[in-house]
Image (cartoon, rainbow, N blue to C red; front, side, top):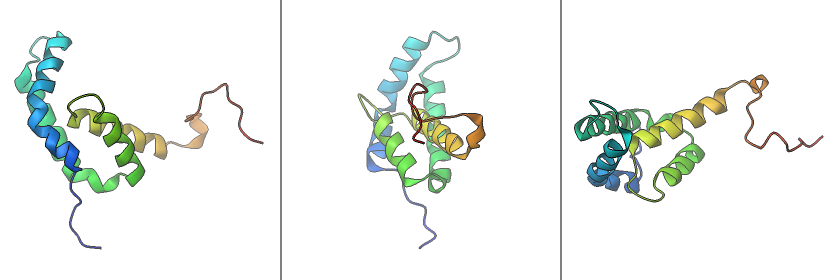
Length: 111
């Protein structure tokens, strides 16, 4: 195995060119003071840099699921991708006794 870091998937890299429309829509919907397109773009750039740095720490399944989720229905967001990956990683690391489940609570476990 080489020391090279695998790149983000092509569809995520291609989405970088579409960050502007995504940020424009996000800022129009947010209604937060001091939240403009420039702040959104900075967040996206920071998230992309962190993803490039931490990409290898996520499992292939986590990457596949989160890339699929964040590329549905419009321009992908690096912020959404890193949020998804971090949540999946944290749930996978959580102790079983916390009661976290990936199935509805009304379904019974197999004996």
